[in-house]
Amino acid sequence: MSEQPRAVYAVAFACVVSFMGIGLVDPILPALSAQLDATPSQVSLLFTSYLVVTAIAMLGTNWVSSRIGAKRTLITGLGIIVVFAALAGLSGSINGIVGFRAGWGLGNALFIATSLSVIVASASGGFAGAIVLYEAALGLGIAAGPLIGGLLGDISWRGPFFGVAVLMAIALLATVVLLDATPKPAEPTPLSAPLKALRHRSLLTMSVTALLYNWGFFTMLGYAPYPMELSAIQLGFVFFGWGLLVAFFSVVGAPRLQAAFGTARSLYGALAVFAVLLALIGVFTEVRWALITCVIASGVVVGINNTLTTQAVMLVSPVPRPVASSAYGFVRFLGGGLAPYVAGQLADAFDLHVPFLVGAGAVLLGIAVLSTGHRMLTAADADMAASGEPDTDVAGEVADEFGGAPGAIDQDLEPGLAARRRS
Image 1: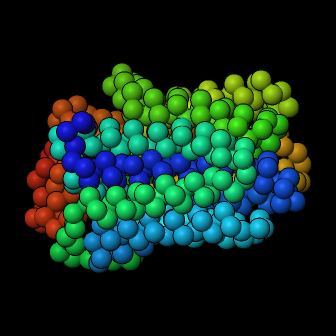
Image 2: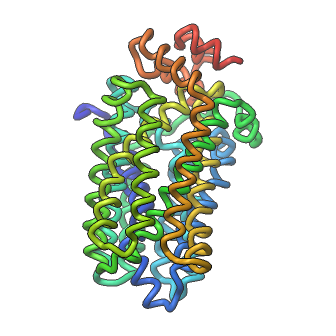
Image 3: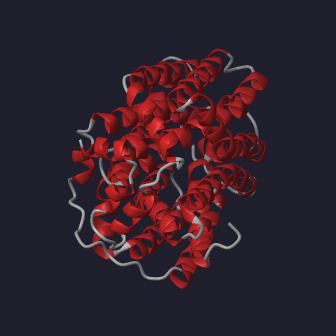
């Protein structure tokens, strides 16, 4: 990875900062609630506005990038994030921050949907090295977000927002200077492509599974900080430990489990353990040490699930990767956005135990949905074993996306997988 072009590192750095935005506000949630005289359910809208807008905007990212090119899409997304992160830091009300987080979500959608394709197209050393670099950036961002949010939030709740604005401005400048212009594909992507892609049972099954998993995940992320009753910096270190486990098991643990037990069984196990941890958080919400232990431990299964679910989507989807990514992102981010809002309503109506128990139930339901696609996952594992590569069609799909030869996708596929994707 040390021999990668500078453009790859520029986009990877932007990925780190972008993924920091997911957990950046976690350590300052109690401070926002206290200083802006807002209830936890009102503060939870920081996640809802951000993720719901990200989800909806995902439907149009391919339409945009296929018309203005990948580089311009990245620059547009980064620019939007810089503006709205700064405006959130300048805001004086919880409603203003929620609104500016929505604008932040629009920029995030444009960036996330394009960055992986750019890294794969620009990286040297093949697909595997590019994916490792992308997963490392994702893990580093998730781990660093809460820590930086805690450090800056200990000074002022405005600090994390201004910090992201500055870092994203640096990433924007690096992308403009170091990333070469990317050609537009020969044929623009229709706006309806992601929704039409969800007609395929394989993609819909994995997307609904991810929605239910994200329901539990963002319930934990949005509400676990309150009963811990810690300072911003203390919360930052708790979620930094969680994020380090996410990063390690995304890059190292998930591939080893997949090789030993297969994708389906590894996902069943990760989701089941996560459901148990959420249930324990729901039962022992008022026991600080138990709550902190369960949250940090969940980083193991979150890392495993993030990597294997995303890879499974790309393996079983019968549509081009960019379209599959947008469709999948729409469904899963929608679940992540709605969960904190519903959790807030449940906490207000009952108590803080209930949202976590409901989240555990959602993850268990996700296992049931995933089991309906067991055969397609085992078939995908068999294709990987036969080809000796995790996904040999990537070069063709990226060539298509960036103006390469039509039909390269199926030529690069192992025959069985290619036939299944056409069906």
